[in-house]
Amino acid sequence: MARVRADPRRIAVIAHRGASEDAPEHSLAAYRRAIEDGADGLECDVRLTADGHLVCVHDRRVNRTSNGRGAVSALELAELAELDFAAGRPVAGGPGGEAPDTVDPERSAVLTLERLLRLVASADRPVDLAIETKHPTRWAGQVEERLLALLDRHPVPGEVRVMSFSARSLHRVHRAAPGLPTVFLMHFALPRHRGGRLPAGVAIAGPSVRMLRRDPGYVARARAAGHRVHVWTVDRPEDVELCAELGVDAIITNRPRTVREQLAEL
Ligand code: G3P
Ligand code: CA
Image (cartoon, rainbow, N blue to C red; front, side, top):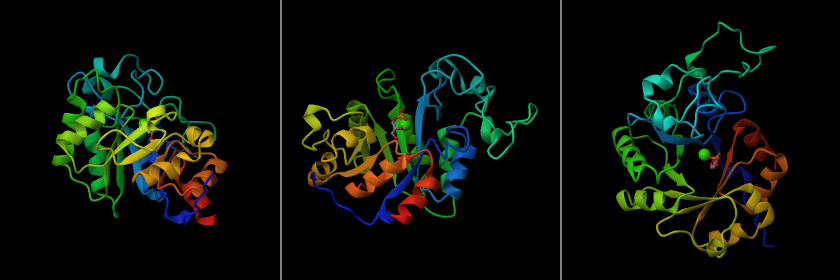
C-alpha cells in the first residue's frame, strides 16, 4: 500500500453539519462555532420544503432532530420555523442541560441555505461550503435548480462545492454550472470506481473513512486519476492519522477544532 504523508497542516478541515459535536447539527450556532474554531469549510445537507425553500436538514423527516414529526418535503417553511431543532440537546458547558425556558433561536431554529450563505458571506475570512443534495431524484432537478439560483444571488468568497451520493444530481449541476466543483460521495468503493475514475465532470472523490480503512490505496488511485479526495466523517484520532498518512485533501468532521489541533501536532 503506497502511503504519502503530505504536510497534515495543509489538509482542509470541513465542519460536518457545523461544529455538530458542540451545538445542534445544522444550527446557525453550530456553523458560527465552526468558523470560530478555525474550520476551513462548512458541510450542510439541503432539502426542499413543500413551498420550495432549501433548508439544512439531514434526514427525510424532522423526527430525530426536532420536537416535530413529518417529512421536510411535506412541511412549509413557516411550519418548520415553529419547531425546536435543539430539543433534547444540552447547552455546551452547561451542568445538566438546557433550562426549560431558555430558547436560543441560533440553536433551535431551522436554518435555510440562504441564511447560511449570508453567514458565510459575512465571515471575516473566506470559508468554503460543501453542500450535499439529498433525495434529488424525487424532485427531478428542482433541488439543483434552486441551489444554483441561490448561489448566484448570494455569492460567497470561499470555494463552493456540491456533493451527492447521486451521480445524476452531480450531472445536473455540472451541466448547468460546469465551473462548480462537485464531490461524488461513496460509502464503499463501487467496482466501476475502484480504478479512481468518477462520473463525468466530477472533480473530487468523497469516500467514507470506513471505505479508506478497508481500501487505503483508493486515495492514490483517485489522485492518479486527477481527483482531489475529501473524506467523511472523520472524528476518531486514528482515522485523522490515517487521512494524514494517505495525504487526503480534506477531512469532513463533527469536531473541527479537535481535528485541526491533532493535524497541527502530527
Ligand atoms: O460529508 C458527507 C457526509 O455528510 C455524507 O453522509 O449521511 O452525513 O450526509 P451524511
Ligand atoms: Ca451530509
